[in-house]
Length: 263
Image (tube, rainbow, N blue to C red; front, side, top):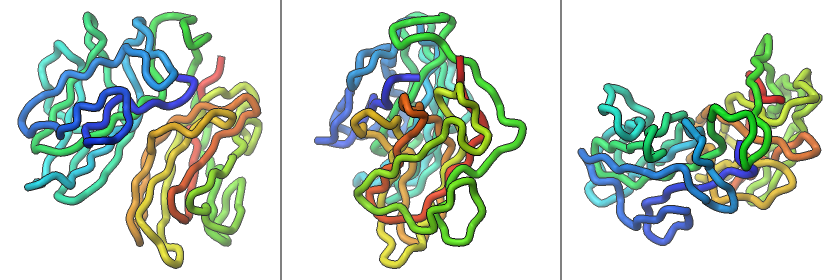
């Protein structure tokens, strides 16, 4: 994993990212995106074979239309596959893994219709035991998925605060050695769900990131009032075995864990 998530690409004008073209993806065309880069205080090394993260369509461009996004390795033929589907006015995220081109370390982004697009990177796969980011990790699947957190009152989970996440603040959530998660875990994987039915519910976003680092400009989920929306995630744990959950507006939130990475 990277020390902290980074925003590799944001096509929206004036938004911070490592790559800021300032114009939407053009419909029917492919953008080639370099990925083996230094970005946001982190390095995606030259031995990276695939990158993992979260992609978000922000489909509020003039003349917005329904469409889909396909991510695929540079140098490969565009496959009949999609990573995101969207309609006019929609902001929709999805977790992704995409292999990189063997020569240039880039991947392609195909948009069926013109739209703004955001790419956040949380980690990568490589064939090296160690690199600039430390020792490589192995994946371990839990025998049974577990519900680590549910903020809704009266719902079963390992951690049940009984109150929504407070908008504009961080919640530090312990994970290592909690609820049967290994004491050796460095990264957890699973599914996060917003249940945005709180009084005065507003649109917003969720950011998951390691405890002990500054909150990055990335997002894992975007939501609107009344929406229940889920997305897969991977988040590195801080040295104390915790991660932070930032909600831009107050909302209920669920974290289910399916596995972890460890040495």
